[in-house]
Image (cartoon, rainbow, N blue to C red; front, top):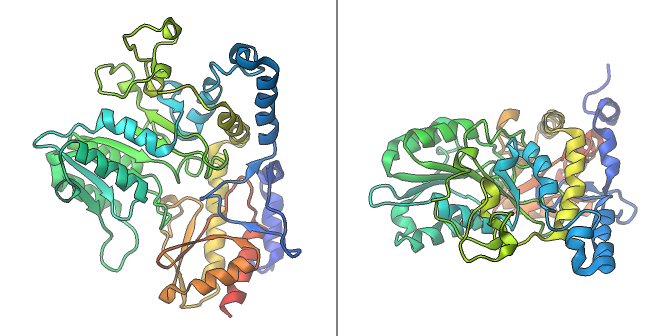
Length: 421
């Protein structure tokens, strides 16, 4: 019988992997000192699709060739360029095209949508978030509160794990929402917590928020391209995400926004208007009255960044070829294998704080290091592993199903064991 913790087993799983060919569609960092890198930081910055350069160069060539006429004459005309991404992105997040738009960056989109959906009153003014949410989300929420004359001390409800636990229980989240009741104006959580790697039950949380009359939104920075999402079916009011992590669109890439179809014709919602959100038929008539487009497109402000979108288009084509169900299936296998390999090390200096249930996590496992010993992380990185350290005591590793292999997992676990020894 083959040892399940052997390199032969890992290679056999790679051979059976229906997505193994997608690895060859990405550039990996160059080897250092002859060591092939193990890239486990797709949760921070995804790898570059090999077609990205070609797609960006095409737009640069068309700019050089056509100048301003490229808006209509380019191979992929710039005027409607964001529309080339809409259907593919909608499939990634489980939405309808009218609910999906690629634009801006994550926190900018969060501010735009909070202007529309965070409407505090004297009695309904609280926002429920996870304690330890990504700081930019917290900054945005608190600044929006202050714009409405509220402070976080009175209006922010932070969800905390039970004593001795690292992650939140869904029933506890629901209990807090129900206890706060009609004082809750908005529930805003991450789809996946950036620190622990916990994936939240979006459907159940959305239902709980709506039962008390609150709007419900999600930051999908660590969920888009990672989880199999069903944003339309789950009835979420709005969501935002970036595209430089699991969506592999490059540093500082353009973000995206989801607005549920039931808000598509809500033209009376307060919004910050800009000309790219204006009706396409009359946009260039330059009339003073703003007429918003129906759906998520109506929240656009400015014309799209073509070069960023070209890089994203290269990645979304790979996602379309693979399909989110297949990617999610491989992701669960990778993390189960990684978890078993770490467990087999049996060293009290490390522990996994990410939920054990694959349904409650994406492809990230967060490894807590006893006494916050950063030197372990530094030794692992020196051996060719691209991981990251998050204060105060966590090494995050994310085997991404598009381009990571079971052999990568085996090699990482072997390095981790040797560094501990």
